[in-house]
Image 1 (cartoon, protein in one colour):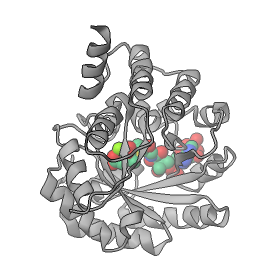
Image 2: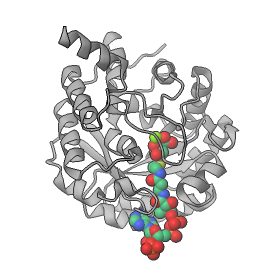
Image 3: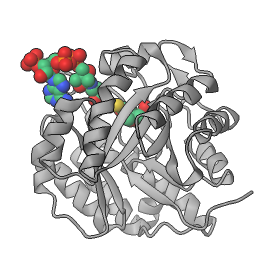
Image 4: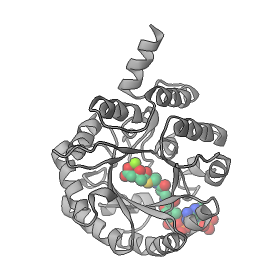
Length: 302
Ligand code: HMG
Ligand code: MG
């Protein structure tokens, strides 16, 4: 076991979480959530995505949200960009990092971004080039790294292939995503090992949706491999509009509770984080989807 002593969490709630909400969430609420997350100590926040508003109307206010954030020094603000059109719009709002998102399954690639895996790489190529020329960090994501809603189980060789292709076009970091939360620790470990064939330990992260309640176990197995970066979502918000039935990412609160309990630093103030999750959950008129937040909120109420 080579547990890291520090972990960086990327809160993807404002993007991965809110992209899946049926009701409209005003830009001001999204901005307030970002402010609360940075106040809680998050040093990277995935704010929004510059995708087609016909495909994901929830993210149509991407530029407005980016413009409204009062940036805190030391915080990295990232946005999703599926193509040059998205990148050209995104760059005006000065993101610190962009995310290109591929899939390990052909069917998911078609449903999510309307092209094959090979075509997606060709679309990303000029995006990555332009971003790197502007000194914008480029993160990649591989969706369906263990399972696909359309194709079922996904072999680690698929992840290895897509990681190789993304590395080949200059993507600097690789997120291994269990889009529909079907993964269990050994499968997730194999998917992560596949990504590690092309990316160093310092350049991989885990992105686990918690549909089957496995995300904390999947996080732990990656920690034991030395992985120290994870995407999580405050209040467990979210899901993907092109992965029906999939629930949100593992709650940031639950992962922080796990890490602090193991003596691993995050720089995050759990109380403030719980307040941030409560803020957005109150707006959405539901309870935070986090066991740790629920327990600690109950304790506060006593
Ligand atoms: P398309 O329809 O094939 O695109 O969509 P197109 O190039 O043929 O253009 C069609 C229209 O869209 C045109 O407008 C373009 O201008 C416009 P029209 O002439 O008809 O008025 N358009 C755009 N508008 C704004 N921003 C853009 C853009 N691009 C084209 N960037 C496209 C292809 C990729 C655009 C579309 O499929 C799309 O937007 N997909 C995004 C889907 C998405 O956001 N999914 C969720 C995020 S991924 C995720 O959640 C997974 C992740 O969390 C990891 C995990 O858990 O797996 C990251
Ligand atoms: Mg996701």
